[in-house]
Image 1: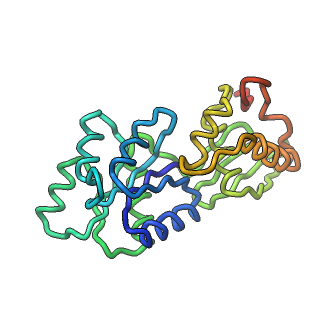
Image 2: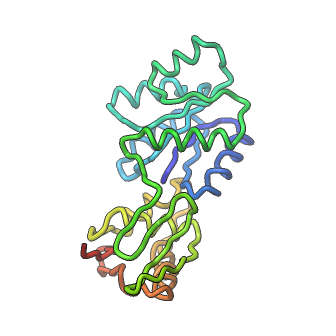
Length: 231
């Protein structure tokens, strides 16, 4: 799950990103509205949720919402603001925000509101994703494999390995290029490393193999990777 965070207060932005990353969200954090719009226009990156501060350098959070909705984007948006008057809340919601959180706020409430937005979203993600003998448990952030005898084994994955496996499980039997994987699973501001995808694939495959899930992700040399699944 990928979130675009647009917050120009450095301390608050860093705290939100740290909290979301701990919850296994992938977070792109930008400090102004112009950069945010450039990220949103990037066809390679698909966001699950967006968090906009109202008052931003460049394009305001309010204008970002209006621009999104004018382009028919259904992306769920949580607006952060110090404005707590009723007319301000109405203006934010009318501009296209899906929810409104007044500063200061607790991180627990922020996470609860994001979960509520996910449940209401057309892209709603269930608590579990199962492909073959693998199950992603989003509630507990774990992966479980099940052998032919019905015995289950928990696989310990890092955040990035979890995100990588999730990406393949959401696109079974589809060829995912290295460029697609890098653009979707690494933050835009991250320093590009040529072999980062291959390195993560090796680590993930080793853990899957050790859990009895060998060769489920195929390498297509010169093209990319594919998770092979027969219903």
